[in-house]
Image (tube, rainbow, N blue to C red; front, side, top):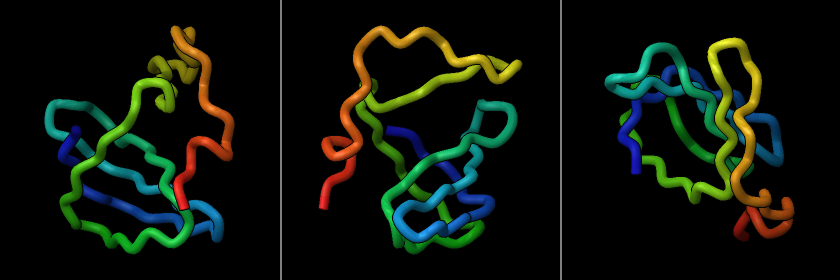
Length: 79
């Protein structure tokens, strides 16, 4: 689990992007969340992510190679 501070929230209907900062990590992290997730700037939240559902990128924006298959979209979002 990761403790982060929300800096900006972008609600897009079926999903929400939260732009967060984490102590010890330079820059902003982007987190995709289910539809109507009620967050506001400045709020501290705890994130938990299964490694199989995470995508990691280097400083140039290139994705790191996946070591496991990503879940199907229907499997990734719980009702």
